[in-house]
Image (cartoon, rainbow, N blue to C red; front, side, top):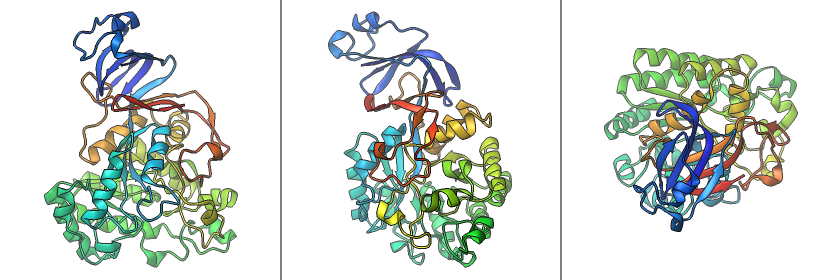
Length: 439
């Protein structure tokens, strides 16, 4: 049993924001109250509990001054397993997630082999079940991520795929995507899309603008994103499919998604902490650790992303957790891979860039990082309520910590945030009623 004392419970599902005690027994939350006395728990006063009393064992967590929130859900991570496990694997990725306060993650399907077949899907699901958190696996939209032939969506859905994506690559053939969206609508599963038209990209990873000029590096135009988002919002509206615009980076694309939501399209959008915290200038300071696909863009784009988060145009904050080895990131800008490791800094960056600046409330942040991602992937959202599975994160909104390369639980440390002092330190992550991380 776990008794969490005096924490500020922040739960968008029940619209709760107040100081309360939380009692966990087994995998579930069994009681919420202004005060739950330790001696009463040990004495077996709460008889409805399956194993009440001292014999069950009791851990008391003093959460005074801390936030007690539903476990976070990251709807966009890369654990590189199978095929690239020198960067990350499902076990190490799960540990990184737990350190960041995540109790559920959604794995992208650009592995090697990619998740376009039953064998790879089963491998990922079974390996995920052996970790301490909840891991769900997407499947590809097209065979081999080639963009030409649809996978057997019925078969993969039947065997546990939680959605479909060719993330990492855009789907350029609108006819193929149209058929995929119609099938996804029948299956009531989401499709998540990487929106970069290569025609408008001279060199990937850096915004086509002032910084790319300074670096004499062609860059990637925001038009590469805008044109794809426009097309796919139209297809979402036409088919009725549930579509996610992944890792949105362009202010124009935010406006496009907003417009199509108003028209009734079941279209959603993700934003990453790096896109709402940094701009293209970060490339000059952090080099390849600030190289992203899609790239960091201008201050105006960053501000419009934040406005999209505030008004609900952007539904989810995700990390696009993309671990790479030191050797890979040490290459010159044109040859280094894009992306950063993000799970362990995400919550803190949300607190720093959005809550502490007064852009959104803590309740809104938890909605973006927990409630909405669960809903998009057709799951019951985590909640601090009686009877709910005890998936919980306990963190200090004002508790500072310094990002240190040697302390990452991930195999990778490719982050521009190393050395930053951040608020929002995670002290405990509880999944299925078990403490899976202690900070």
